[in-house]
Length: 126
Image 1 (cartoon, rainbow, N blue to C red):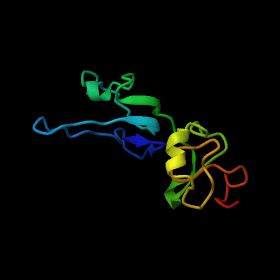
Image 2 (cartoon, rainbow, N blue to C red):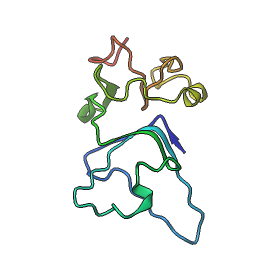
Image 3 (cartoon, rainbow, N blue to C red):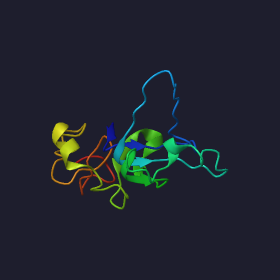
Image 4 (tube, rainbow, N blue to C red):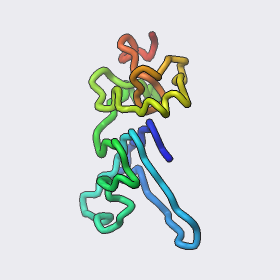
């Protein structure tokens, strides 16, 4: 289960499955942003990439830029107009109540490693 996550990068497909039919396979994405740009519809017939399937995907955003401050410098704080602000699941946030900078993420959680704080969008600091 992936919850309150951001799966984003430079590739068109930042999410790929390597399913082996000899083993059980379960996956579930909840309150997550996923970059999966399939311009040639190479995966259109694969049910694992049916982002409308509620048994695999719940409250996901597909192919939107999360608007990190500066990913090239590893500044993965969200900008104030990020599409994922408040997208997080509250139950998941209660399991991991603080982000990597010790900010409380329980009232209105954001996906990713850092909770957006209104004064931190440019510097990553409170």
